[in-house]
Length: 403
Ligand code: NAD
Ligand code: MG
Image (cartoon, rainbow, N blue to C red; front, side, top):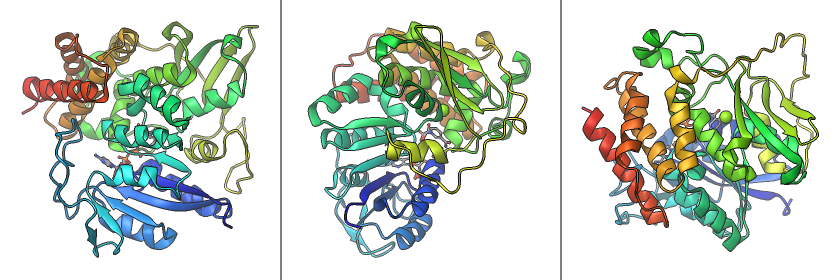
């Protein structure tokens, strides 16, 4: 049993985190849950800790009280929470409270794989720390790569860690590429469900409600990514993610709308052959594959693939004019520098304001565009510079669009 791999789950109480625990419960012979962290859902974290008995449990915010700087999902204020390392008996007597619990969980010696399932830029430091400590990062937290792709790459070079994507499209691409060299790939085509507003008119989109935006047709996910799927900002994040993960120029990354979410993406090779990876829409396989890559292991929960039951599979062009967040993100990715961090942070802030009912759906891309336009020349050479760009974008959106 001692050769079981230790897994840390950052964001264990979220949609990906709970999915991962379901998967890990079936594979206790190979994996051991070594660490769990959550933002504020202490009750669920406690249940999970009782069921999986990790050696480390971390909670960012206790009893709804944000610790000194943990409430800022944005820039590092430079402060350190005063009670880091404080053990509390609320969840268990080995629970660490405060934002630094993420880094502690990600770098522990008994952790081999860090599943980063935190939402947003808050996951960046833990990804960097895990890679520098030589860990495998099973990355759901795509915002990390978007915000600081080149820092992530240099952390891999320095520490010898690796990233394996959890995002279903990128898992699909990885599975199709399967060891082929970059020059054998002509391009990749990411599939997009199109979200709940795929066939809505622009006028109707403008005043879509929070409830409507949260009604995703094929995936059950956290609120932020669900709204991103409705604006198509999620697909922009994924294009930038693919750029960094597979070292592909933006001209080699395309998108097609596929409402059934059965084909998870395509890879077109230089000889014209196209491979696709398919399956029913579930994050369990991408999570499992990120743990076992490049191997596959038997999984009893996998359902038999029935193409007839899943028919028809259809494909449509993206309506770029009606979903401007997508092109804004791709252009930010192409521009490089701090632009992807500004795009990501402006989007995170706008979505948060939208979810509070203080911004219309149509304003989300306008807020992102204004932030990118105004903050177009910020430094991006270091983590602190990118955190500052992130903070500036959030402040801009709050000031101009928030209430
Ligand atoms: P979620 O909101 O359901 O869960 C987020 C988790 O992160 C929770 O456990 C929460 O406690 C924790 N968290 C939130 N803010 C935090 C902070 N500031 N510091 C520390 N922890 C924090 O989100 P999700 O849908 O599970 O998505 C997680 C990530 O995975 C996102 O980056 C998302 O884009 C990506 N992803 C999700 C799916 C999906 O199916 N849900 C698919 C692909 C990619
Ligand atoms: Mg995806």
